[in-house]
Image (cartoon, rainbow over all chains, first blue to last red):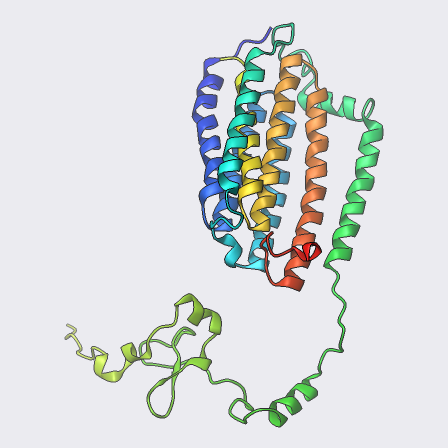
Length: 256
Length: 99
């Protein structure tokens, strides 16, 4: 017979709404990175639920595998793919959103009423008896006796997945990679000679010489190709006018 | 409180994940919503393991985690491959078979 102590009930009523809110947030936030962080929070909450429910091993595995490995992989791919138009929340198929929400409310209502009405025919038992030698020992006993065949099959699945990922990610060059000599020749033979010696460096000023300030052309205007195009697109390019000598405060306070 | 409350949470999370798969357009977010659904299923397995007093549910959840890890590896490789050829991570753009 299982009785749930007050601390677990408090933990549940605090964390469960937070997890559901975070999951809802995944649907409405615009940036994929924010979605990933909210999902990581939901997964940590689930790990706490597992540990509270006497599944200590699974709780730890949840943190190590999901919030550790899987979410890192997601963030890595997000950085690789970058931000594009797919992050917008506009409806591309008309009427999809109302239909999805109606279906979700229907499914959720069905599921809730199902759990509310279903009975197992016995009271909740709890894992005190099954975990009497410890959760990890109990799991290991099951895993390496009853479930040893699925366990072996899963190893084959892991190897197949690793091979599949390698095959998919493999990228064969269709043309030979240009050598440094060929690149140099191409720089001089094609187009203008303006960038033959490389692009100009970013600006060097008395008060600022970071990579986000463009250098000045001979006529005093900014040279946009002296800084990375990404910085310009992101709006992180500073105006070199701010660092002109007339603007610099060159009064020296007297030191004692 | 009884342990069935965990099942309600799992059901809600599963439903939210399903809505996300349908509504969101970024392939990576869609994939994360699939992960959310898998996690919700795991929570039901762990809860039923506790209700029934046996460890079989936890074993099933463990296998689900392994399969989910494989699925993430292959799925993200597919997303990267599509992105490489189409320069987009939107699920609407991968519609070559329709035309």
